Length: 253
Image (cartoon, rainbow, N blue to C red; front, side, top):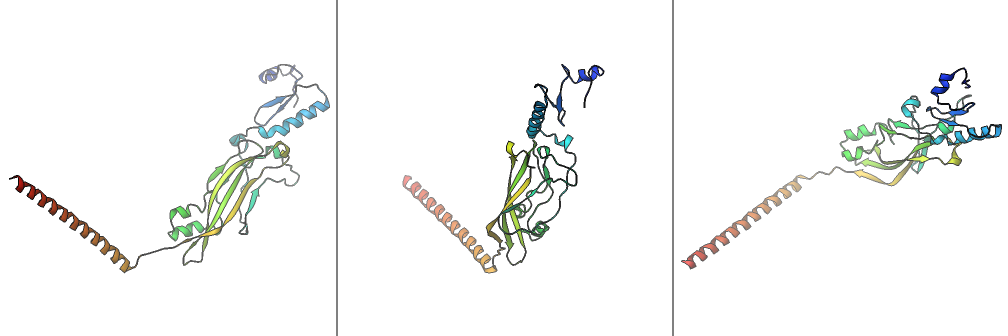
């Protein structure tokens, strides 16, 4: 946009333009870079190229700029070996995407391995809470990249879990995440929200153990016997002390 400061003086004054002609490159957050070099085609192109290349350092205003996003839903089949899947914005039709200002901040509504209703099934099976709480640790969490050209990265460790006597298998997971910052030489690459996973070679087997009736009786008799023995020891100690006190009193008299 070009503005004549002679005809639009108040507008230029509000924009704090101190001299004209002036050339500015405005960013989406309202800030701008001022061209201060000698006016020729080579310097203008260099100014624009450098400013756009460094735009990944601009702090993103998520609520103001990213009020729209994509909703992703689906399932994939994976082998029981380490791997990953990622989410990345792609161009569609005649629309081109600027990777320097692509933001892949996201909310995980649900992510699990195995059957989707595995957590509900585990709750119905009355497995310990510290187990089924690890079935969907990412659900409802937000992962925000504060700057352009950054992306959240997730690392998942998967452990298969079985209930003794039942065929179903569900998967516990531990989760860590970090923010990956693309280097300047990677400015042309679109950021990815990456989920890396690794299946543990070991499995957890949950067994329900109950005592037999004779084990209960044995434990009960052991408790009663221990109580009787302690009472006998206390009674003997009292008798011994009483005898010693009487002997002492008899000698004194």
